[in-house]
Length: 145
Image (cartoon, rainbow, N blue to C red):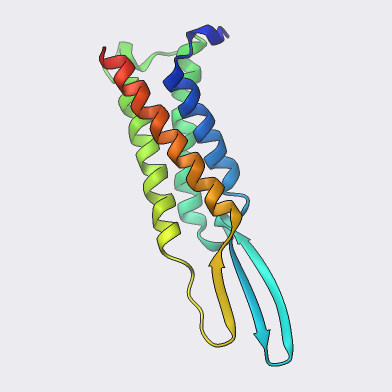
């Protein structure tokens, strides 16, 4: 595999997608309880809190990485089939970013003595999604020139 064939957009999109995938396994939410004579805290990854959205982020990220790797290894090039590779990567990045933002805005609910909040894995996932989108936009601009 010739890594010199990777553009800046390819590199950023791939790194962002990998970060987004890894982040789905990190704690996105934390729950703490302090009441009724009991105190403690629990954290949950995106897979624990919303497996369906975690799967969509994983699938979109894998599709983008696969498209880039298949072209660089000269196994398969979507552009030869009439499908712009940059557009596929951009759509995958948008899906990842939209679902990450959705999970940022909607914290699992609770009541009473329970406190629900965002955890550090969510912020890493958001950073990965942003890098993914920036890389996809750069890739899209590179292919339009």
